[in-house]
Amino acid sequence: MESNRALRIFAGATAIVTGGASGIGRALAEELARRGCEAVLADLQGELAEEVASGIRARGGKATAIKTDVTDYPAMEQTVKETVKRTGRLDYIFNNAGIGIGGNVSHYGIKDWNQIINVNLKGVINGVQAAYFVMMKQGFGHIVNTASMAGLMPSPGNVAYATTKSAVVGLSKSLRAEAAQSGVRVSVICPGVIRTPILESGGKYGKMLVEIPPEKIREMWEKFKPMAPDMFAGKALDLIARNKAIIIVPSWWKLYWWLNRLSPSFGISFAEKWFKKIQKELGRA
Image (cartoon, rainbow, N blue to C red):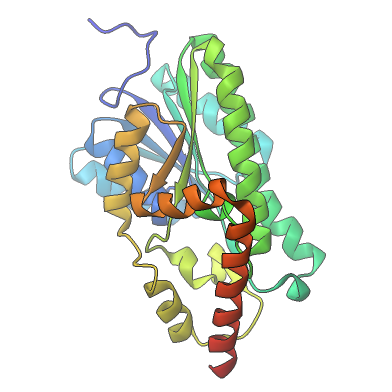
């Protein structure tokens, strides 16, 4: 019989997924459940999270929904405590909830900075803080933080988002080195462009600070060949199972990462030229 003091991959495991009601979080939760894991969907959109969890259960999987605000540490701590009390373990926490704010820094107000930092960075920190000590006590666990390719390379026009995602990458790499001696794994997911609601940068998933026709935004993102969320989730979980430190999906985005590591100045120059081109196209729109 498998020991209760070992990480399960993924059958019989328990995983909390923040932002589990939509986008990447939903796809991860559904794929985790398909692989035999109980998925706990922690999301501020409580009704939508329950709808997704009900769908998982209808297909024979295990899932629960908890309305959770990731910017509220006591709420995250309670979500972790309730999950561990009910299931007896916490194998994974996917700190995935995030928003996007589109526009140049000249368009930002300090409230915009605070909003995206609270969700994208503080939300990850809260998840780590709530789960890490539980995992240390167990002697096992895997913390998976969602960053972005914007956390690995320059992202003009998306500076606040890139700021938070760069911080998540740094947090994850440093914690991975520190946590290994406690038996706790840490990975960071850096998605390329995935076909999720955040691409629209509006409503509850963020906002656009400049007026750009929605069809123009969609046209711009389509150039990057967005991957379907379910395909992304399958590939990401395969790499998480192998305990990869930095997970880049789709894999072809690794080329940009390698180029930026090889020559940071080239990466900045390339981003500058790309941004000028995009600005010109949007100006005509």
